[in-house]
Length: 276
Ligand code: DGL
Image (cartoon, rainbow, N blue to C red; front, side):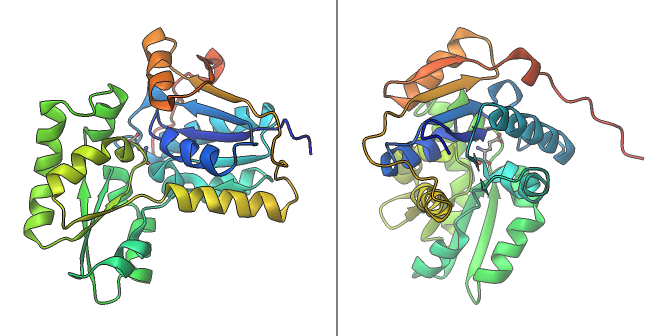
């Protein structure tokens, strides 16, 4: 395994950079190849078949670029596709799921809220997480349509974004939530705003560091972890050809990276067959 082989990471857009940042912090010697599928964001309102086709296309591309492991840096895509991806591809595929377990363990009030996309809220995988970890605690799911799109537009603290966050938090806070799971990888970019609206008694759970540790464990097990000091590179690709999409990636990444448009052949919307 060459030390130059990157970790392939993708999300419906720029949200997965919250995972990529944690991976880079923990393993600066690893090269990263990140795809923001911003042309097709949000995934959270799309049919499962659409999300699956995008995940297959993007993973196939990353594998073709020599990726040694794939990080599905998207809760929505993980819940909808990770089993299928693992059937199709032989390399390690690490996903991201809402942090229900740490939230439940840390909650004092016994009421936990999960902020997520519509698809994540509706997913059987999310219900399964609650069944496995909630015990006597209440876990309230709050779909947040429109929130990931605000991050895609870099509206991290606009009055409209604040109003949307307040609308989604109001019923949760009224129910006595003291812990909020950021169940979409876009939401960590809204942490200051969400924390401000939630108030000081509410803890926010972001699983990015736990995901990075899991990636490290998998690489270590396979002997694929680069030694410290390796000359790593970071490439960020967007499925939006628009220069503004690349500026957005640069701005949220906030460090040196090569930024470019994804090959056009990987950007086309999948032609879905109508359900029988
Ligand atoms: N970042 C994605 C997630 O973690 C979803 C945003 C979207 O709806 O595309 O679920």
